[in-house]
Length: 105
Image (cartoon, rainbow, N blue to C red; front, side, top):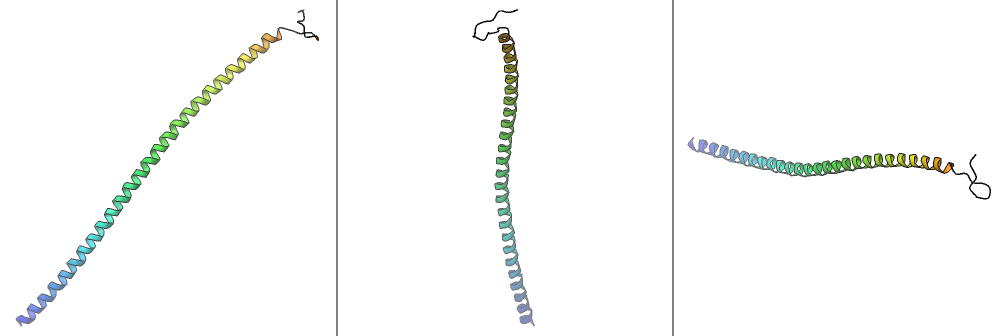
């Protein structure tokens, strides 16, 4: 009877050892998976930071371009106004058919 109890206990210990071994293996697999997820998350975070930086730069360039467009529009308006003044000034002078200054009436 004692031999039977010892054999049963030995068998149970063997099963327990096998279960603990499988459990340790499973825990190691979970740890490896979590480590891989952490590494990929870090890579993803780095990629997102790069995208954010690119977006900020694009926004700055867009704002700069908008300011340049506004300046160009102001310069075009000023040039148009000056051209109108020049046309009015030149209109004062009238030339005859020979290209000579005509007398004003």
